[in-house]
Image 1 (cartoon, helix red, strand yellow):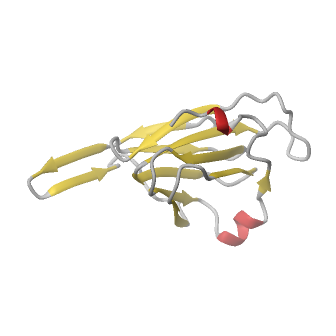
Image 2 (cartoon, rainbow, N blue to C red):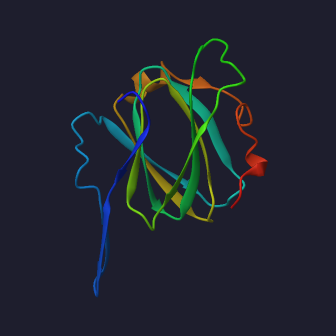
Length: 146
């Protein structure tokens, strides 16, 4: 995977409730998962990037604006990089695939939103490959519409 992509899932509803699935996604490369809960819509998390780690993001509750940027120089990235934008929501079962070499930044657009994140690296590998940049480096999050 060299470019970000979205894997569309399915949502099934009946009298018992709702099932969101990603039946075309296979977990063979996933080593860990974690859940990020944003109680309010003012919190911006990121930019956090990885040269070697791949991630997959799934919104299990609420909704998120997610932005990705491909880093050109890890020591001193260009301020002119153009971010890609994605909206993830519980209403559409979709998995955002983030390749290695990208930084991500996101914020909830609904209170009490939850993002499930899968990674192909252990926590130790991820921490050794973690790069952080100011949240407004490539996009002014105050301009993001709810």
